Amino acid sequence: MNRRFLLSALLIAVIGLGLAQSFPPLAYSLTGEEQPLSQVRGLLDLAADAARPRPDLRPDVPVREANVNPYGINTFLQEEVEPAKREKQVQLIAAAGFHWLRQEFPWYDIEIHGKGDFEDRRNPAPVSAWAKYDNIVGLADKYGLEIIARLSSTPEWARTQVTGSFAPPDHYSDFADYAAAVAQRYRGRVTHFQVWNEPNGNGEWGNQPVDPEAFTRLLCETYARLKAVDPNIVVLAAALTPTNELTGDNLNEFVYLQRMYDAGAGKCFDVMSAQGYGLWSGPTDHRLNPITVNYSRPLYLRDIMVRNGDAAKAIWISEMNWNTVPPDSGLPPDYGRVTLEQQARFAPMAYERAKKEWPWIGVIAFWYFKRAGDSEKNQTWYYFRMAEPDFTLLPVYNSMKAYIAGHPYKP
Image (cartoon, rainbow, N blue to C red; front, side, top):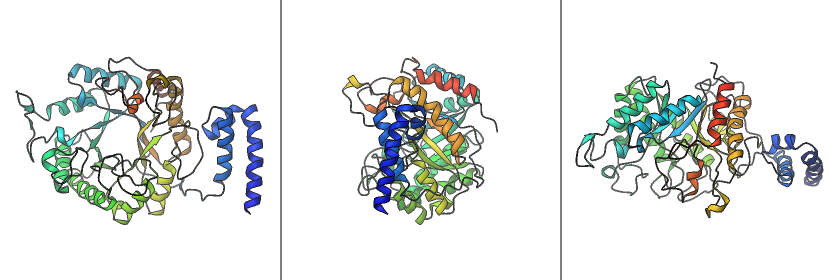
């Protein structure tokens, strides 16, 4: 059996070499690779995929929260000091055709000094901590956009046991109360809330061993409080960072999600979230290997959801993009590396593939529009942006604008 498979794989590789040389578009459509040798390797990988069990995707099951406007984008509007710059950013996003803003509502920036205290006294003249967020929600209303409110980032007073703003709070009820306060203030205007972000790694669980069972308790308590404010609120589980690590500060997202289900998380979210980074290959990469991070990786999350009785729930992609860190920057290509031209081609294709192949996907949120300043240019992740801090638009803005105009959402 192994010998037959090896011979078949070698034959496919030889055929693949011919395809890559004669039909590069076909090879690209299967592997997401644009260089001939990489295409051959990709085709060989696809042959190896035949020996692995395929994810159970249940594409014919009706899925709640999937038939929604798919066009989303991540914003950091709370970091723009000048309201005029916030509005210009929202104007540009709306002009491009995006519908959703995945926007942080950081706990440490809202309930700053103590429980129930929503006044900002960090500067000489105290102001309402809500003022900035009232403005952001008002801008979304003005330009016809919806907000996915990302709830995370613990203030100092609520985390005495573990340090760092991404550490979980000492008492999960404090986080749930903050979430309810945000939901109550914007009741009927903000209806989608994401609980935390990447609790399975990237230091977003306080640089301590991650804990799926503890996160599930946080999620379930928050879910209950949000639904008590408004039962029509849609609660998104945190997006899980793609990782193959199995211990310590990072835990493979497939293991993590299964442990969430084992702890009872299935009754505590309406939509699952995933990260949709392509890294080193394009959006058409159909290879499926559980240790490879590519644009197809969320299929494994869908498989886990199906096996746990959640086939009727959608996955929303919280962050999708390709990194354009310049080769001469001296920065490592931690998230892969593409040119600005490739990024401009890949992003629309990511939406197109999801629309055609994944009926259980809802919103896909581009990561990200812009930062308020360029102090992070010395960090690789900065180069996911769609616009420079001075509002200079990069090619991907225009390609996405053209794609959305040509492919408007039709309910």
